[in-house]
Length: 167
Image 1 (cartoon, rainbow, N blue to C red):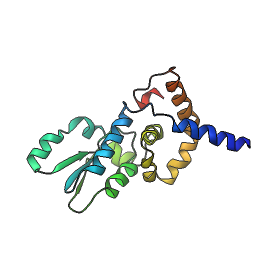
Image 2: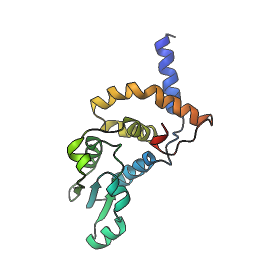
Image 3: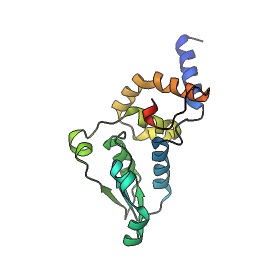
Image 4: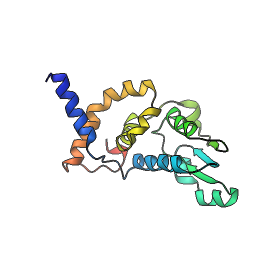
């Protein structure tokens, strides 16, 4: 086996191991995504940063509008294009996508995002890869060694991961 083949085998083996990010913000994003996919239309899909994550009462919204609210609010680690692609591609007839205005998120840095955070969610739910842009794939190659090392550290018990800030 060539050294490239061996390297690819090692990477594939590490990525196949259980994800350490289930109880983090990244894990929460995956649960939001799963909720979005299984919620029947018509529904509201709320896309935002932390204002939605920590500032929206979905139950109150549903009681007042009589329509299910899927809260896709998370922190700024998820770039706008990534979250919007998820919302748009999972919206159906009768659904309404609500975009929360956040100055920094939408105007100053519309496509900035934390690749580590997005990669951690993809580690939990590989299906999310289809929403990544080409630039994200290129950037992920730069952070792959760190992702793999952190995952091994978690699995062997050297580090506990509770959030993307633990990178």
